[in-house]
Amino acid sequence: MPKESNNNSAFHFFLYLVSFLALGFLAVGLGMILFQIINKLLPDLSQGRYYFNQSTLKNGIASVFVALPVYLFFVSLINKKLKKEEIDQESKVRKWLTYIILFIAAAVIIVDLVTLIYNFLDGETAGRFLLKVLVVFLIAASIFGYYFWEIRKKQLANKKYPADKISFIVLLVVALIILISAFFVVDSPQVARQKRIDQQTISDLLSLESSINEYYREKDKLPENIAALAEENLYVPKSGTAVEIEYSVIDELNFQLCADFKRDNTEDQERGFYEGEWQHGAGLVCFDKKVYETEGLKPYPIDD
Image 1 (cartoon, rainbow, N blue to C red):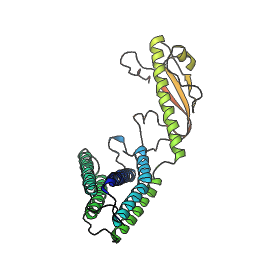
Image 2 (spheres, one colour; image 1 turned 90 degrees about the horizontal axis):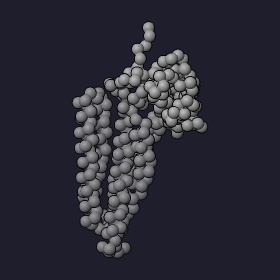
Image 3 (cartoon, helix red, strand yellow; image 1 turned 180 degrees about the vertical axis):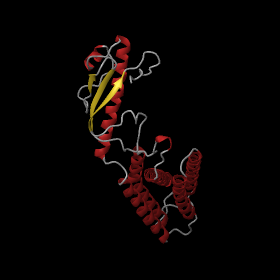
Image 4 (cartoon, helix red, strand yellow; image 1 turned 135 degrees about the vertical axis):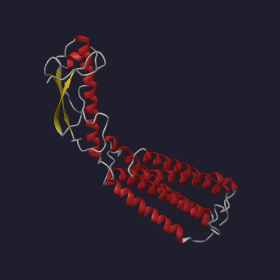
């Protein structure tokens, strides 16, 4: 079969560029998943946080889920064209793009290693540090090993390289194992939705508490009900939200906020800034609050 003319170099550029773009998403996605699995299995309780992030894990899953088939398809297509001499093995597009992606991969790896070393010096446990370095090393070695070997292959026309097929199978199996493992760690869509509703409820509680304190500073008394806040153009949760908040006055300085939560967050590894103040079980939970002083927003001293 005759070779394609040089006019098709733009198409070759497109094939290699898409394959390398997919490779980037695939490598980063696998790294995200493995890092978060390590964070989950080896929690670091320093500074009161676990550093396990569901959002990062979900981004990794989505990246691998989309990028893996795209990468395998385009690499297979490129290899078929090389075998049929529709792409010249000495193509400058092939060589330049390969070395460019290796350069970008090297830059990303260096940044990752610098970050990992910084985190280790900043107190991250040795076990987590070594496992994450191992992840970066394995991903880097796989990319550099395959592409340095691939760019040096000779006599590609009508020649089969069993190593290509083996590489694809190994990549597919390893990626699927990592992807399946991630589903044992990530929240289900139902749980994620319940957590998002609870987080919004806490956000509403915080805003409502702020409005109550603002009302007290202006009126020198607690509002009788939530409607009194609205009359003063202070923030109140919109009616019809997923969770209705109940407010009640205890005495002249103390009040109570209640809401119905979907899940218990006391054992969650993802903890926010207000983790201690707003920890809750599932169901109706009430929080006893006290208004703040006008000056400095410090709480009134609690009576013995």
